[in-house]
Image (cartoon, rainbow, N blue to C red; front, side):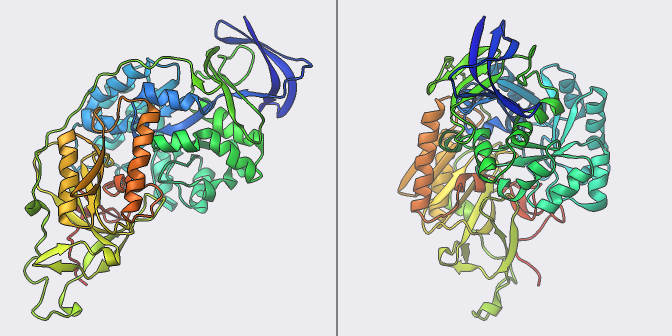
Length: 555
């Protein structure tokens, strides 16, 4: 039996009092008022309501070490990324590795593997696989239904997966950026209960009014807290907090859900509403076995110096102290590397793009060149725009134009030696060199963007040599971070991965980019379920039309 004294923050009764918590056999057996001099605060542990652990670039047992240091006791995690690479074997890897840490990780069953039929993935989870996985006790919900057109149009395979979730009594997560009106009503009517993709306040408000729970996302690239935070006080019972995709440097240097508690208070939000969104709502919505600082609950709680600065002093899970005084108190176990990567190196000829006949007329003026569709990236957003722009052509080859910030981008399959697909993108900002990654949502093929064809080829080939990871630099000088688990995650300590990743980000900035998170932004430029224009391993894709389009536009 152990006792802990401090200022008890009771978010249920919305009060604070000096008291003592008694813990025995992993449970809270009593919470009593008691006078003492300890000014530290005791609160329920924090919960990330939606995260892809793979985006931390570390395996679950390593991610857990970063998370508990920030006061997180549980996460709701979608193993969608590794499932796209390795299928059920990848999901099983995540489940097994998560058992090496005390962090409570609640995995779901990916609903969209592959996310669309318009890209190459390493696996397919059909209705039979999804139904079989949903029957498992250690898989707790149907993960984000990204194929919202399939729901609205009632595609049989999509509807069968939703029906399977209902049959097994599992929550269904949503993913519907910008969806409004009658289509939204139909989407929600199919039993989909959450959305973490809102980037506009009115969109989120409409979804709440129609019965959805909104997850306010603040990750490494997509950051929506600044826009959506008023919802926390306006709809405290209908909002949760999540990171979705958070890179290791963000987790270590900025924080996890704890940073949103601090920011929320800076915005003047009610502390009890913040705790409700960060703990109570996800626990209740997903039915998590996570304590809420009540007698009889699992002893999952945190101790902070005070509510304003919210510095995590200790984290407890099931009564065991897992983090204290800057130290994680459980060991890092050895993790085997697993991967699927079948790609040979490419050559300079593979990334050359000769305009088709008729694209360039005899005259050399700008009017004589057909415009191309260019992806317009938006810093901090997954949504892109598109512009029609006259390309730069050298020796009959369409090339990057750093002076106008129009850069060549390529996507190629990691699963076979299929042709390299080529597009162009604006707002990456590289003045020289290239960046490349095998983290490319959702199928995690190879994606690269660069100032010259040579730079692109060299960075891509470095990834192929490493069988996955990220790389940055010029053809003559490259830095890399190998990711030996599925080309998505490292088995190294989080601090080591974060340090290396930070170094690569700094190198990218030296090459000219001003993006907050250039590799994270790049990773979403092949995500064919987020509007407007994206590039997949089968070609340029207009998400609003849900069809492939030609690079050269007919005006």
